[in-house]
Structures are given as C-alpha cells and as structure tokens.
Length: 299
Image 1 (cartoon, rainbow, N blue to C red):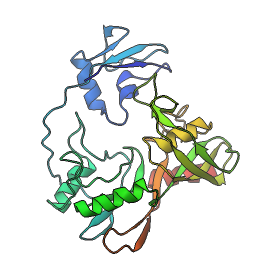
Image 2: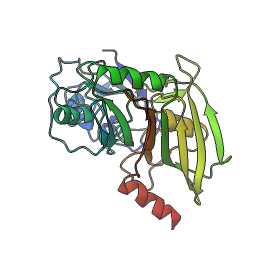
Image 3: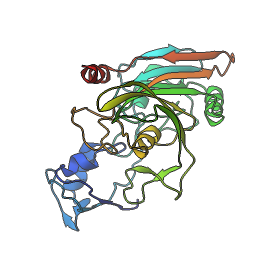
Image 4: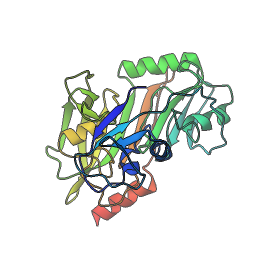
C-alpha cells in the first residue's frame, strides 16, 4: 500500500490521537508506531509524542490481510425490519464495516450475527448488506439490504437522489444566511490524505441543503439534507462555509465541550420499499451527548 504523508497543522496533540480518525483505530496507530511504521520528520517516534506544527508524519500502512469476518453478538437498535431490509440506528463510535486493522466490533459483525446468512452479497464479504455508510462518530439511521434485489433498488434510489437523508448537527459560530445550499465539489485533501476537502482536483460534485433550526450565542443547531453522499460531505461543507461541526476531530477548530466526536446525527431516512414500492420514512432522536450539548448551549 502507498505511504501516507501528513503535515501537522496544530501543536500539542499526541500523535496516536492525531492520526486515530475514521478508518484507522488508535490501537492500529500505536501498533504501527511500535513497529516503526510511523515516523516524524524521518525518525521513529513514540505513542505519547506531542506533535509540533509543521511536523512531517509518514505512515506505512499495514498490508491487507485475508479477512475472516466473524459474526458477533452485539446489540443493535433496529428501527424497522422485514424480509428485504433493515433500518438501523447506529450509535456514535461504531464503525460501519471492517477494514484493515479493525475487523471486529463493527456494524457488519453485529448484522452477521443478527441476520445469519440473510444479507445482500453485492458488496462482498467485508460489507455484506451495506448500501451506504456514515462515519464512525456520526450516529443515526442506515439502510441495510437483506437481498440483492433490495440492494439494487436502494442503491438505485440513492443514485437517483430519491432517498431522503436528513441530518441534524451543531455547528460553530453564528450561521448566516440561516438557510442555503452548499454546491461545492469534494475530493481527497491534497495535503492530508486522511481528510476530504472542497477541491477541483479529482473531486465529485456535492450538494448540501442547510437550515438553522436554532441559533445560540456562538453555535447553531442546523438541519442538513443531502442531495449527494460524498465522504464527510456535511463535515466538509459546513467547514467550507466557516461553520465546522462541533467536536469534529478533523475539521473543527477545537473541542471546548470535550465531545467524543462530531455533533452530527442522521435523523431521518425515507425511501420507496424495494418490493412494495410504498414510501417509508423513519425518524430517530439524537443520542444523549448530542442532546446534552444542545441543552448546555440553550442555557
């Protein structure tokens, strides 16, 4: 796998925490450091090294293994289920599907236990049933396909932009205008491969509708509706207009409330049932930490 090069933008963060973002667990980072797979300014480093602005970090990723993904008895919050699909409320902190260095504890491991062999196989052994995903530290609703027929239908609906995906988030600052559309292409950040960015380089069109639900003194509760579904789309777009999602380890300026991840929740999902054609819509409230943050800001 290609070597990843990062340039540290902020001083004071432990290197294992700095690198531990979506797709690479802290345990994986620590193992790489211990095995010499991560260097700072060309030299070996330690897990507790505190980065300085301008430090050049080089990561030699682990080679992919032949994965043996096992079913695990992990509790699921199932909002709806029938013979074709499930709607699952994913908790904050859970990874959706296994990846190198992180083969257990994911939503897929839990789904394999719950559904046995009744999951769509279109996305292979690493992502059975997974039609779309949300980030590890984003909570909320996900569609899961049990059959290939359902998977094809739901994927086509997402591609045709007929699936309703509404999020709620808490963003930094006073958001003006209170309602609008961010239409800006998203691709890999050329200076940091762990991040996405608004860029004309190797990017795809991305469109997010946003509306302020409640404005606080220095933050806002914002509703976002996706028209496209790019990696980190809401997180990148809100940062792009100057109002990053609070608690975001990649895109926020700081984390004054000590949140465990970005204050972003997939609240509503609506779609046509792949067999009956009936429109179905589900709504779940944000988790306790999110609601606690809103209460603090209101007071």
